[in-house]
Image (cartoon, rainbow, N blue to C red; front, side, top):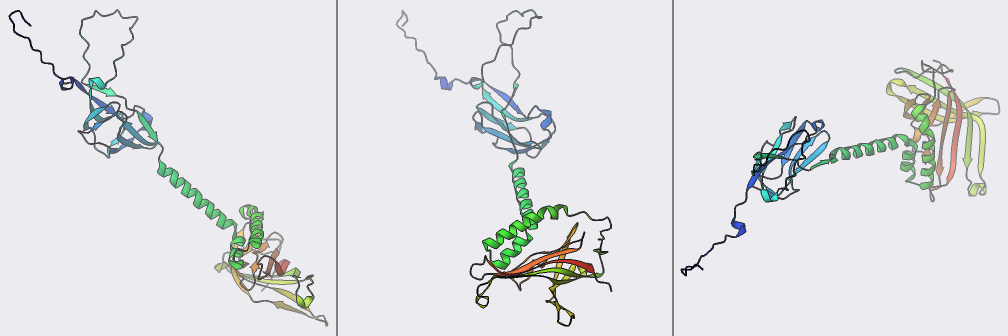
Length: 353
């Protein structure tokens, strides 16, 4: 109140209406030259958008993965400096932000230079450049797509190896309807054969054997195999439940190769000897199958013999021309017990002419 009675009136504006000073800050791509080249994959916000500190504003793609740049302060996006899809080969300004002075951290005083005398104070703060540089927090993310591809490739490779390593198990599953006992024996048999299938047995450079037999690319050849024949029968009412097992040296097999077709026709049987001393070949029907050579062995795909419940792969070892094979029948109820089997352990010789 003045002495003359007049009152002094003060108008106080709310603090929210007082304009605050703001400055523009550029957000740059990473300073590490080792991450380049980078590609601008995506801007997350359009100019005019307000973002808070830590909000992702741009995503970059590079050989080392994805890089997300976040806003270092609460700010207003003024402009996106470069178009999406642009490839960067060096550090580049990407986004311009407008930040209020109140949102900026207090400036740290610079350490004094001991070799430089202190400058006199002028009472005025040094002016800062209108565009200061912000160091955004960088989050490097390993590309998930590459990991998914690696896992899928590993799964396919494992499945292919299991398929390659279990021919007997696969055939036993089809022929016996998945009987556990037979599948177990088939898997054990396949497991013991894996090293031989991988590495095989040593052969001479020409591929010929001591018996003079050679697997060719074209043409035909025949083998006659003789040796041990073992028959087993679990017994029945006709035998009084007694098992029958016989082992003779009259086992017989013939193999006719057609090299151009990669096919071999196999017949197994016995040599019958009559009282007068005469001999006769008693052979079953021919089973024409494909074959594969694994260095020292020739494996004949006899597992798909539907005339019996199970059949092994007939294997011819080229080093001594030994042929091994087994087939048989299982109990129709349990599907696990072998009721009848025939096995061969033969030695083969080429048939001339």
